[in-house]
Length: 348
Length: 206
Image 1 (cartoon, each protein chain N blue to C red):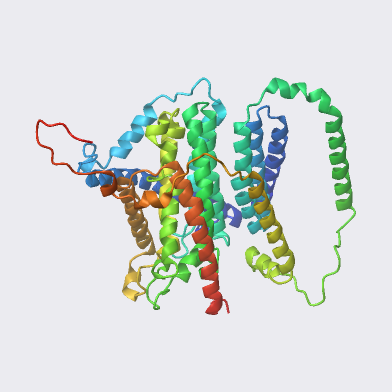
Image 2: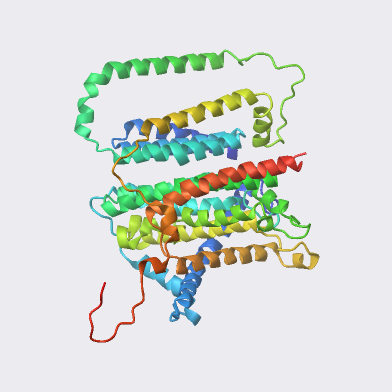
Protein backbone atom coordinates (compact mmCIF):
# COMPACT_ATOMS: atom_id res chain seq x y z
CA UNK A 1 0.00 0.00 0.00
CA UNK A 2 2.97 2.29 0.65
CA UNK A 3 4.06 1.98 -2.98
CA UNK A 4 0.53 2.90 -4.10
CA UNK A 5 0.74 6.21 -2.24
CA UNK A 6 4.29 6.70 -3.47
CA UNK A 7 2.99 6.44 -7.02
CA UNK A 8 0.66 9.33 -6.20
CA UNK A 9 3.77 11.46 -5.86
CA UNK A 10 4.35 11.39 -2.09
CA UNK A 11 7.72 10.98 -0.46
CA UNK A 12 8.37 7.55 1.08
CA UNK A 13 7.73 8.70 4.63
CA UNK A 14 4.52 10.55 3.83
CA UNK A 15 3.36 7.57 1.81
CA UNK A 16 4.18 5.17 4.66
CA UNK A 17 2.34 7.38 7.11
CA UNK A 18 -0.75 7.68 4.92
CA UNK A 19 -0.71 3.97 4.12
CA UNK A 20 -0.51 3.03 7.80
CA UNK A 21 -3.35 5.36 8.77
CA UNK A 22 -5.42 4.03 5.90
CA UNK A 23 -4.61 0.47 6.95
CA UNK A 24 -5.66 1.14 10.54
CA UNK A 25 -8.96 2.60 9.37
CA UNK A 26 -9.41 -0.29 6.93
CA UNK A 27 -9.12 -2.74 9.82
CA UNK A 28 -10.91 -0.79 12.57
CA UNK A 29 -14.11 0.18 10.73
CA UNK A 30 -14.90 -3.22 9.22
CA UNK A 31 -14.06 -4.70 12.62
CA UNK A 32 -16.64 -2.48 14.30
CA UNK A 33 -19.17 -3.46 11.64
CA UNK A 34 -18.26 -7.12 12.20
CA UNK A 35 -18.72 -6.70 15.94
CA UNK A 36 -22.19 -5.24 15.43
CA UNK A 37 -23.19 -8.10 13.16
CA UNK A 38 -21.58 -10.74 15.35
CA UNK A 39 -23.55 -9.52 18.37
CA UNK A 40 -26.70 -9.86 16.29
CA UNK A 41 -25.76 -13.32 15.06
CA UNK A 42 -24.83 -14.44 18.55
CA UNK A 43 -28.20 -13.33 19.87
CA UNK A 44 -29.86 -15.22 17.04
CA UNK A 45 -27.80 -18.31 17.88
CA UNK A 46 -28.67 -18.19 21.58
CA UNK A 47 -32.30 -17.75 20.61
CA UNK A 48 -32.09 -20.82 18.39
CA UNK A 49 -30.47 -22.85 21.18
CA UNK A 50 -33.23 -21.78 23.57
CA UNK A 51 -36.01 -22.28 20.99
CA UNK A 52 -36.77 -18.56 20.90
CA UNK A 53 -36.92 -16.19 17.94
CA UNK A 54 -34.29 -13.67 18.94
CA UNK A 55 -34.14 -10.12 17.57
CA UNK A 56 -36.54 -9.91 14.63
CA UNK A 57 -38.09 -6.46 14.68
CA UNK A 58 -35.52 -3.89 13.51
CA UNK A 59 -34.77 -4.29 9.81
CA UNK A 60 -35.06 -7.52 7.79
CA UNK A 61 -34.69 -10.50 10.19
CA UNK A 62 -33.80 -7.97 12.89
CA UNK A 63 -30.36 -7.50 11.36
CA UNK A 64 -30.23 -3.81 12.33
CA UNK A 65 -30.84 -4.59 16.00
CA UNK A 66 -27.22 -3.90 17.01
CA UNK A 67 -27.22 -0.56 15.22
CA UNK A 68 -30.47 0.41 16.92
CA UNK A 69 -28.93 -0.56 20.28
CA UNK A 70 -25.84 1.46 19.44
CA UNK A 71 -27.92 4.52 18.60
CA UNK A 72 -29.92 4.13 21.80
CA UNK A 73 -26.78 3.89 23.89
CA UNK A 74 -25.28 6.87 22.07
CA UNK A 75 -28.24 9.03 23.01
CA UNK A 76 -28.18 8.09 26.67
CA UNK A 77 -26.66 10.18 29.39
CA UNK A 78 -23.22 9.25 30.66
CA UNK A 79 -23.59 8.96 34.40
CA UNK A 80 -20.40 9.33 36.41
CA UNK A 81 -20.76 8.31 40.05
CA UNK A 82 -19.86 11.20 42.32
CA UNK A 83 -17.57 9.03 44.46
CA UNK A 84 -15.69 7.68 41.46
CA UNK A 85 -12.27 8.69 40.29
CA UNK A 86 -13.50 10.69 37.32
CA UNK A 87 -10.49 10.61 35.00
CA UNK A 88 -9.70 6.93 35.42
CA UNK A 89 -13.40 6.06 35.31
CA UNK A 90 -13.59 7.45 31.78
CA UNK A 91 -10.18 6.19 30.65
CA UNK A 92 -10.89 2.55 31.57
CA UNK A 93 -13.37 1.76 28.76
CA UNK A 94 -11.12 3.57 26.30
CA UNK A 95 -8.19 1.36 27.33
CA UNK A 96 -10.28 -1.80 26.93
CA UNK A 97 -11.50 -0.73 23.52
CA UNK A 98 -8.12 0.47 22.21
CA UNK A 99 -6.26 -2.62 23.38
CA UNK A 100 -8.88 -4.83 21.75
CA UNK A 101 -8.19 -3.10 18.43
CA UNK A 102 -4.38 -2.91 18.75
CA UNK A 103 -3.71 -6.63 18.52
CA UNK A 104 -5.31 -6.79 15.08
CA UNK A 105 -2.26 -5.00 13.64
CA UNK A 106 -0.33 -8.26 13.24
CA UNK A 107 -3.20 -10.52 12.09
CA UNK A 108 -2.69 -11.58 8.45
CA UNK A 109 -6.04 -11.48 6.60
CA UNK A 110 -4.63 -13.08 3.45
CA UNK A 111 -1.22 -13.89 2.04
CA UNK A 112 0.82 -10.76 2.78
CA UNK A 113 -2.24 -8.67 3.74
CA UNK A 114 -1.20 -7.53 7.20
CA UNK A 115 -0.82 -4.06 8.67
CA UNK A 116 2.49 -4.75 10.37
CA UNK A 117 4.47 -7.85 9.45
CA UNK A 118 6.82 -7.97 12.45
CA UNK A 119 9.18 -10.74 13.54
CA UNK A 120 7.76 -10.95 17.03
CA UNK A 121 4.09 -10.93 16.02
CA UNK A 122 3.02 -13.61 18.46
CA UNK A 123 4.87 -11.94 21.35
CA UNK A 124 3.18 -8.68 20.36
CA UNK A 125 -0.22 -10.34 20.64
CA UNK A 126 0.75 -11.78 24.03
CA UNK A 127 1.96 -8.35 25.19
CA UNK A 128 -1.18 -6.56 24.03
CA UNK A 129 -3.52 -9.14 25.50
CA UNK A 130 -1.74 -8.76 28.83
CA UNK A 131 -2.63 -5.06 28.67
CA UNK A 132 -6.31 -5.89 28.40
CA UNK A 133 -6.52 -6.53 32.13
CA UNK A 134 -5.83 -2.87 32.91
CA UNK A 135 -9.09 -1.62 31.45
CA UNK A 136 -11.01 -3.96 33.73
CA UNK A 137 -8.91 -3.37 36.85
CA UNK A 138 -8.99 0.40 36.46
CA UNK A 139 -12.73 0.33 35.83
CA UNK A 140 -13.27 -1.70 38.97
CA UNK A 141 -11.11 0.52 41.11
CA UNK A 142 -12.24 3.88 39.71
CA UNK A 143 -15.91 3.01 40.20
CA UNK A 144 -15.25 3.10 43.94
CA UNK A 145 -17.92 0.52 44.51
CA UNK A 146 -17.69 -2.95 46.03
CA UNK A 147 -18.97 -5.25 43.32
CA UNK A 148 -16.96 -3.70 40.48
CA UNK A 149 -13.88 -3.97 42.67
CA UNK A 150 -14.47 -7.67 43.41
CA UNK A 151 -15.03 -8.21 39.73
CA UNK A 152 -11.81 -6.40 38.83
CA UNK A 153 -9.83 -8.59 41.23
CA UNK A 154 -11.40 -11.70 39.78
CA UNK A 155 -10.74 -10.55 36.23
CA UNK A 156 -7.09 -9.79 36.93
CA UNK A 157 -6.49 -13.14 38.62
CA UNK A 158 -8.32 -14.99 35.88
CA UNK A 159 -6.53 -13.33 32.98
CA UNK A 160 -3.08 -13.76 34.54
CA UNK A 161 -3.77 -17.42 35.32
CA UNK A 162 -4.83 -18.35 31.84
CA UNK A 163 -2.16 -16.26 30.13
CA UNK A 164 0.42 -18.62 31.64
CA UNK A 165 -0.96 -21.69 29.92
CA UNK A 166 -1.64 -19.71 26.73
CA UNK A 167 2.04 -18.74 26.74
CA UNK A 168 3.13 -22.39 26.91
CA UNK A 169 0.68 -23.38 24.19
CA UNK A 170 2.07 -20.63 21.96
CA UNK A 171 5.59 -21.94 22.62
CA UNK A 172 4.57 -25.37 21.28
CA UNK A 173 3.25 -23.75 18.11
CA UNK A 174 6.32 -21.55 17.74
CA UNK A 175 8.58 -24.59 18.18
CA UNK A 176 6.78 -26.41 15.42
CA UNK A 177 6.54 -23.46 13.06
CA UNK A 178 10.05 -22.20 13.80
CA UNK A 179 8.98 -18.55 13.79
CA UNK A 180 7.22 -15.92 15.88
CA UNK A 181 5.91 -14.24 12.75
CA UNK A 182 2.13 -14.77 12.54
CA UNK A 183 2.16 -15.04 8.75
CA UNK A 184 5.07 -17.49 9.00
CA UNK A 185 3.05 -19.67 11.36
CA UNK A 186 0.21 -19.80 8.84
CA UNK A 187 2.61 -20.66 6.01
CA UNK A 188 4.23 -23.39 8.13
CA UNK A 189 0.85 -25.16 8.20
CA UNK A 190 0.68 -25.50 4.42
CA UNK A 191 0.42 -29.23 3.71
CA UNK A 192 1.22 -30.04 7.33
CA UNK A 193 -0.60 -33.40 7.46
CA UNK A 194 0.18 -35.94 4.70
CA UNK A 195 1.31 -33.01 2.57
CA UNK A 196 -2.17 -31.72 1.85
CA UNK A 197 -4.11 -30.76 5.00
CA UNK A 198 -3.39 -27.16 6.01
CA UNK A 199 -3.96 -27.22 9.77
CA UNK A 200 -2.01 -27.95 12.94
CA UNK A 201 -5.18 -29.11 14.66
CA UNK A 202 -5.13 -32.45 12.82
CA UNK A 203 -1.68 -33.20 14.15
CA UNK A 204 -2.25 -35.74 16.95
CA UNK A 205 0.45 -34.10 19.06
CA UNK A 206 -1.05 -30.63 18.69
CA UNK A 207 -4.77 -31.44 18.83
CA UNK A 208 -4.91 -31.59 22.66
CA UNK A 209 -3.35 -28.16 22.97
CA UNK A 210 -5.73 -26.87 20.29
CA UNK A 211 -8.58 -27.84 22.61
CA UNK A 212 -6.77 -26.33 25.59
CA UNK A 213 -6.18 -23.12 23.68
CA UNK A 214 -9.86 -22.88 22.77
CA UNK A 215 -10.85 -23.27 26.43
CA UNK A 216 -8.14 -20.90 27.62
CA UNK A 217 -9.22 -18.28 25.09
CA UNK A 218 -12.75 -18.46 26.47
CA UNK A 219 -11.35 -17.92 29.96
CA UNK A 220 -9.04 -15.16 28.76
CA UNK A 221 -11.91 -13.20 27.23
CA UNK A 222 -14.07 -13.94 30.29
CA UNK A 223 -16.76 -15.63 28.22
CA UNK A 224 -19.23 -18.15 29.53
CA UNK A 225 -18.64 -20.61 31.17
CA UNK A 226 -15.85 -18.48 32.65
CA UNK A 227 -17.72 -15.15 32.87
CA UNK A 228 -17.20 -14.87 36.62
CA UNK A 229 -16.19 -11.24 36.25
CA UNK A 230 -19.78 -10.37 35.43
CA UNK A 231 -21.60 -13.16 37.22
CA UNK A 232 -24.93 -11.41 37.68
CA UNK A 233 -26.02 -13.62 40.58
CA UNK A 234 -22.99 -12.58 42.63
CA UNK A 235 -21.63 -9.29 41.33
CA UNK A 236 -24.58 -7.42 39.74
CA UNK A 237 -22.85 -6.68 36.40
CA UNK A 238 -19.25 -6.90 37.52
CA UNK A 239 -16.88 -4.11 36.62
CA UNK A 240 -19.48 -2.57 34.30
CA UNK A 241 -22.00 -1.99 37.08
CA UNK A 242 -21.45 1.76 37.36
CA UNK A 243 -21.12 2.36 33.64
CA UNK A 244 -23.76 3.72 31.33
CA UNK A 245 -24.13 5.06 27.83
CA UNK A 246 -21.10 5.13 25.50
CA UNK A 247 -18.64 4.12 28.22
CA UNK A 248 -20.62 0.92 28.65
CA UNK A 249 -20.84 0.48 24.88
CA UNK A 250 -17.05 0.77 24.59
CA UNK A 251 -16.65 -2.11 27.07
CA UNK A 252 -19.16 -4.08 25.08
CA UNK A 253 -17.45 -3.41 21.74
CA UNK A 254 -14.00 -4.08 23.20
CA UNK A 255 -15.16 -7.36 24.67
CA UNK A 256 -16.53 -8.59 21.37
CA UNK A 257 -13.49 -7.34 19.44
CA UNK A 258 -11.43 -9.40 21.88
CA UNK A 259 -13.61 -12.45 21.34
CA UNK A 260 -13.19 -12.06 17.58
CA UNK A 261 -9.45 -11.71 18.08
CA UNK A 262 -9.32 -14.93 20.06
CA UNK A 263 -11.36 -16.67 17.36
CA UNK A 264 -8.91 -15.34 14.78
CA UNK A 265 -5.97 -16.58 16.85
CA UNK A 266 -7.53 -20.02 17.10
CA UNK A 267 -8.01 -20.01 13.34
CA UNK A 268 -4.45 -18.84 12.70
CA UNK A 269 -2.60 -21.04 15.14
CA UNK A 270 -4.44 -24.30 14.66
CA UNK A 271 -6.69 -24.17 11.62
CA UNK A 272 -4.43 -22.73 8.94
CA UNK A 273 -5.49 -19.07 8.99
CA UNK A 274 -6.10 -17.80 5.48
CA UNK A 275 -5.14 -21.12 3.82
CA UNK A 276 -7.91 -23.34 2.47
CA UNK A 277 -8.43 -26.47 4.57
CA UNK A 278 -6.86 -28.72 1.93
CA UNK A 279 -3.83 -27.94 -0.20
CA UNK A 280 -5.63 -28.39 -3.52
CA UNK A 281 -5.17 -25.89 -6.35
CA UNK A 282 -8.85 -25.07 -7.18
CA UNK A 283 -9.48 -24.09 -3.55
CA UNK A 284 -6.92 -21.29 -3.87
CA UNK A 285 -9.30 -19.62 -6.35
CA UNK A 286 -11.29 -18.54 -3.29
CA UNK A 287 -9.54 -15.51 -1.73
CA UNK A 288 -7.67 -16.18 1.50
CA UNK A 289 -9.71 -13.61 3.40
CA UNK A 290 -12.88 -15.64 2.79
CA UNK A 291 -11.29 -18.79 4.24
CA UNK A 292 -10.03 -16.77 7.16
CA UNK A 293 -13.44 -15.27 7.93
CA UNK A 294 -15.10 -18.65 7.49
CA UNK A 295 -12.75 -20.09 10.11
CA UNK A 296 -13.28 -17.14 12.47
CA UNK A 297 -17.05 -17.55 12.15
CA UNK A 298 -16.80 -21.27 12.80
CA UNK A 299 -14.79 -20.56 15.96
CA UNK A 300 -17.30 -17.91 16.96
CA UNK A 301 -20.10 -20.41 16.49
CA UNK A 302 -18.32 -22.71 18.95
CA UNK A 303 -17.95 -19.81 21.41
CA UNK A 304 -21.68 -18.99 21.14
CA UNK A 305 -22.58 -22.66 21.37
CA UNK A 306 -20.60 -23.07 24.58
CA UNK A 307 -22.06 -19.89 26.04
CA UNK A 308 -25.58 -21.04 25.27
CA UNK A 309 -25.21 -24.54 26.69
CA UNK A 310 -22.61 -24.70 29.46
CA UNK A 311 -23.38 -23.49 33.01
CA UNK A 312 -21.01 -21.10 34.74
CA UNK A 313 -17.98 -22.41 36.61
CA UNK A 314 -17.43 -21.78 40.28
CA UNK A 315 -14.49 -19.50 40.97
CA UNK A 316 -12.36 -22.15 42.69
CA UNK A 317 -13.04 -24.53 39.80
CA UNK A 318 -11.85 -21.88 37.38
CA UNK A 319 -8.61 -21.37 39.27
CA UNK A 320 -8.09 -25.10 39.66
CA UNK A 321 -8.55 -25.65 35.94
CA UNK A 322 -6.05 -22.90 35.14
CA UNK A 323 -3.31 -23.71 37.62
CA UNK A 324 -3.68 -27.39 38.43
CA UNK A 325 -4.80 -28.79 35.11
CA UNK A 326 -3.82 -26.55 32.20
CA UNK A 327 -0.50 -25.31 33.54
CA UNK A 328 1.06 -28.75 34.19
CA UNK A 329 -0.35 -30.22 30.99
CA UNK A 330 0.83 -27.34 28.81
CA UNK A 331 4.23 -27.38 30.49
CA UNK A 332 4.48 -31.10 29.85
CA UNK A 333 3.40 -30.54 26.27
CA UNK A 334 6.22 -28.05 25.66
CA UNK A 335 8.55 -30.81 26.84
CA UNK A 336 6.81 -33.40 24.68
CA UNK A 337 6.68 -31.30 21.50
CA UNK A 338 10.27 -30.11 21.76
CA UNK A 339 11.40 -33.67 22.53
CA UNK A 340 9.53 -35.00 19.51
CA UNK A 341 10.92 -32.30 17.24
CA UNK A 342 14.43 -32.91 18.54
CA UNK A 343 14.09 -36.65 18.12
CA UNK A 344 12.77 -36.48 14.57
CA UNK A 345 15.43 -33.97 13.55
CA UNK A 346 12.92 -31.18 12.80
CA UNK A 347 15.52 -28.54 13.65
CA UNK A 348 18.30 -29.98 11.51
CA UNK B 1 11.78 11.94 10.14
CA UNK B 2 9.15 9.56 11.52
CA UNK B 3 11.79 7.93 13.70
CA UNK B 4 12.89 11.29 15.03
CA UNK B 5 9.35 12.43 15.80
CA UNK B 6 8.47 9.14 17.45
CA UNK B 7 11.71 9.17 19.46
CA UNK B 8 10.89 12.57 20.88
CA UNK B 9 7.30 11.58 21.56
CA UNK B 10 8.31 8.37 23.37
CA UNK B 11 11.20 9.96 25.23
CA UNK B 12 9.25 12.97 26.44
CA UNK B 13 6.34 10.78 27.56
CA UNK B 14 8.75 8.49 29.43
CA UNK B 15 10.28 11.43 31.28
CA UNK B 16 6.98 13.18 31.92
CA UNK B 17 5.28 10.05 33.22
CA UNK B 18 8.30 9.13 35.33
CA UNK B 19 8.02 12.57 36.92
CA UNK B 20 4.31 12.01 37.43
CA UNK B 21 5.08 8.75 39.26
CA UNK B 22 6.73 10.89 41.92
CA UNK B 23 4.34 13.81 41.89
CA UNK B 24 1.04 11.94 41.79
CA UNK B 25 -0.67 12.12 45.17
CA UNK B 26 -2.60 8.92 44.84
CA UNK B 27 -0.37 5.78 44.84
CA UNK B 28 -2.66 4.09 42.32
CA UNK B 29 -2.09 6.98 39.94
CA UNK B 30 1.64 6.58 40.53
CA UNK B 31 1.52 2.94 39.46
CA UNK B 32 -0.51 3.82 36.40
CA UNK B 33 2.01 6.49 35.41
CA UNK B 34 4.74 3.91 35.93
CA UNK B 35 2.93 1.64 33.48
CA UNK B 36 2.80 4.48 30.93
CA UNK B 37 6.56 4.94 31.42
CA UNK B 38 7.24 1.21 30.90
CA UNK B 39 5.10 1.16 27.80
CA UNK B 40 6.85 4.12 26.21
CA UNK B 41 10.25 2.71 27.15
CA UNK B 42 9.21 -0.34 25.12
CA UNK B 43 8.52 2.06 22.26
CA UNK B 44 12.09 3.38 22.56
CA UNK B 45 13.38 -0.21 22.44
CA UNK B 46 11.49 -0.80 19.21
CA UNK B 47 13.08 2.34 17.75
CA UNK B 48 16.60 1.02 18.33
CA UNK B 49 15.65 -2.28 16.70
CA UNK B 50 15.43 -4.38 19.87
CA UNK B 51 11.88 -5.57 19.27
CA UNK B 52 12.35 -8.71 21.38
CA UNK B 53 13.42 -6.70 24.43
CA UNK B 54 10.52 -4.31 23.83
CA UNK B 55 7.97 -7.13 23.83
CA UNK B 56 9.56 -8.70 26.91
CA UNK B 57 9.39 -5.33 28.66
CA UNK B 58 5.68 -5.10 27.97
CA UNK B 59 4.91 -8.75 28.80
CA UNK B 60 6.98 -8.95 31.97
CA UNK B 61 6.82 -5.48 33.45
CA UNK B 62 3.52 -4.12 32.18
CA UNK B 63 1.69 -7.43 31.98
CA UNK B 64 2.85 -9.06 35.20
CA UNK B 65 4.93 -6.96 37.58
CA UNK B 66 2.87 -3.78 37.34
CA UNK B 67 -0.39 -5.73 37.72
CA UNK B 68 0.90 -7.06 41.03
CA UNK B 69 1.98 -3.54 42.05
CA UNK B 70 -1.47 -2.29 41.18
CA UNK B 71 -3.06 -5.13 43.14
CA UNK B 72 -1.09 -4.35 46.27
CA UNK B 73 -1.53 -0.60 46.05
CA UNK B 74 -5.27 -0.86 45.41
CA UNK B 75 -5.70 -3.11 48.43
CA UNK B 76 -3.77 -0.82 50.75
CA UNK B 77 -5.73 1.38 53.04
CA UNK B 78 -3.67 4.50 52.72
CA UNK B 79 -3.90 7.42 55.09
CA UNK B 80 -2.51 10.41 53.22
CA UNK B 81 -2.14 12.55 56.31
CA UNK B 82 0.06 9.89 57.89
CA UNK B 83 2.16 9.68 54.75
CA UNK B 84 2.80 13.42 54.80
CA UNK B 85 3.57 13.35 58.51
CA UNK B 86 6.55 11.10 57.78
CA UNK B 87 7.96 13.65 55.33
CA UNK B 88 10.21 15.57 57.73
CA UNK B 89 11.57 12.39 59.23
CA UNK B 90 12.58 11.00 55.85
CA UNK B 91 14.05 14.19 54.38
CA UNK B 92 17.73 13.34 55.15
CA UNK B 93 17.44 9.90 53.58
CA UNK B 94 15.63 11.33 50.58
CA UNK B 95 18.25 14.01 50.12
CA UNK B 96 21.02 11.42 50.33
CA UNK B 97 19.34 9.30 47.66
CA UNK B 98 18.83 12.36 45.47
CA UNK B 99 22.51 13.30 45.77
CA UNK B 100 23.63 9.76 44.91
CA UNK B 101 21.33 9.63 41.88
CA UNK B 102 22.40 13.07 40.68
CA UNK B 103 26.08 12.09 41.05
CA UNK B 104 25.46 8.92 39.06
CA UNK B 105 23.72 10.92 36.37
CA UNK B 106 26.64 13.37 36.13
CA UNK B 107 29.14 10.51 36.05
CA UNK B 108 27.16 8.71 33.39
CA UNK B 109 26.91 11.74 31.15
CA UNK B 110 30.59 12.47 31.69
CA UNK B 111 31.55 8.93 30.76
CA UNK B 112 29.30 9.05 27.72
CA UNK B 113 30.91 12.27 26.51
CA UNK B 114 34.44 10.89 27.09
CA UNK B 115 33.96 8.57 24.12
CA UNK B 116 32.97 5.01 23.30
CA UNK B 117 33.36 2.39 26.01
CA UNK B 118 35.26 -0.79 25.15
CA UNK B 119 34.13 -3.72 27.23
CA UNK B 120 36.94 -6.15 26.47
CA UNK B 121 38.10 -7.16 23.02
CA UNK B 122 35.93 -9.27 20.72
CA UNK B 123 37.10 -12.85 20.46
CA UNK B 124 38.93 -13.85 17.33
CA UNK B 125 36.58 -15.25 14.75
CA UNK B 126 33.39 -13.87 16.31
CA UNK B 127 31.36 -12.08 13.71
CA UNK B 128 28.87 -9.32 14.33
CA UNK B 129 25.29 -10.44 13.94
CA UNK B 130 23.76 -9.21 10.72
CA UNK B 131 20.73 -6.98 11.02
CA UNK B 132 18.70 -9.41 8.92
CA UNK B 133 18.71 -12.04 11.69
CA UNK B 134 15.68 -11.54 13.94
CA UNK B 135 16.41 -10.49 17.53
CA UNK B 136 15.03 -13.68 19.00
CA UNK B 137 17.19 -15.94 16.85
CA UNK B 138 20.32 -13.92 17.61
CA UNK B 139 19.65 -13.89 21.35
CA UNK B 140 18.69 -17.56 21.37
CA UNK B 141 21.73 -18.65 19.39
CA UNK B 142 24.01 -16.88 21.86
CA UNK B 143 22.08 -17.85 24.99
CA UNK B 144 21.99 -21.57 24.25
CA UNK B 145 25.58 -21.85 23.05
CA UNK B 146 28.06 -19.49 24.63
CA UNK B 147 26.13 -18.54 27.76
CA UNK B 148 24.35 -21.82 28.33
CA UNK B 149 25.77 -22.34 31.85
CA UNK B 150 24.94 -18.82 32.98
CA UNK B 151 21.48 -19.18 31.47
CA UNK B 152 20.85 -22.43 33.31
CA UNK B 153 22.26 -20.99 36.53
CA UNK B 154 19.82 -18.10 36.24
CA UNK B 155 17.03 -20.61 35.71
CA UNK B 156 18.13 -22.58 38.75
CA UNK B 157 18.26 -19.46 40.92
CA UNK B 158 14.73 -18.54 39.85
CA UNK B 159 13.54 -22.07 40.60
CA UNK B 160 15.08 -21.95 44.06
CA UNK B 161 13.52 -18.54 44.68
CA UNK B 162 10.13 -19.87 43.59
CA UNK B 163 10.36 -22.93 45.81
CA UNK B 164 11.53 -20.72 48.67
CA UNK B 165 8.61 -18.35 48.24
CA UNK B 166 6.17 -21.25 48.31
CA UNK B 167 7.81 -22.82 51.36
CA UNK B 168 7.75 -19.51 53.23
CA UNK B 169 4.16 -18.63 52.47
CA UNK B 170 2.50 -22.02 52.39
CA UNK B 171 0.74 -22.84 55.62
CA UNK B 172 -0.85 -26.14 56.26
CA UNK B 173 -4.27 -25.19 57.47
CA UNK B 174 -5.89 -27.29 60.16
CA UNK B 175 -9.57 -27.76 60.63
CA UNK B 176 -10.60 -26.72 57.13
CA UNK B 177 -12.44 -29.03 54.85
CA UNK B 178 -11.31 -28.94 51.27
CA UNK B 179 -13.21 -30.24 48.30
CA UNK B 180 -12.45 -33.50 46.66
CA UNK B 181 -12.76 -32.68 42.98
CA UNK B 182 -12.78 -36.30 41.85
CA UNK B 183 -15.65 -37.23 44.14
CA UNK B 184 -17.55 -34.17 42.93
CA UNK B 185 -17.01 -35.14 39.32
CA UNK B 186 -17.92 -38.76 39.93
CA UNK B 187 -21.18 -37.90 41.67
CA UNK B 188 -24.10 -39.04 39.55
CA UNK B 189 -27.78 -38.05 39.71
CA UNK B 190 -28.62 -41.50 41.14
CA UNK B 191 -26.48 -40.81 44.21
CA UNK B 192 -28.33 -37.68 45.16
CA UNK B 193 -31.86 -38.00 43.85
CA UNK B 194 -34.54 -40.64 43.63
CA UNK B 195 -37.70 -40.86 41.66
CA UNK B 196 -40.84 -41.52 43.69
CA UNK B 197 -44.17 -42.47 42.24
CA UNK B 198 -46.24 -40.93 44.99
CA UNK B 199 -49.92 -41.77 45.38
CA UNK B 200 -52.17 -38.71 45.62
CA UNK B 201 -53.21 -37.70 49.11
CA UNK B 202 -50.38 -39.32 51.05
CA UNK B 203 -47.38 -37.66 52.67
CA UNK B 204 -43.90 -38.43 51.43
CA UNK B 205 -41.31 -40.19 53.51
CA UNK B 206 -37.91 -38.55 53.26
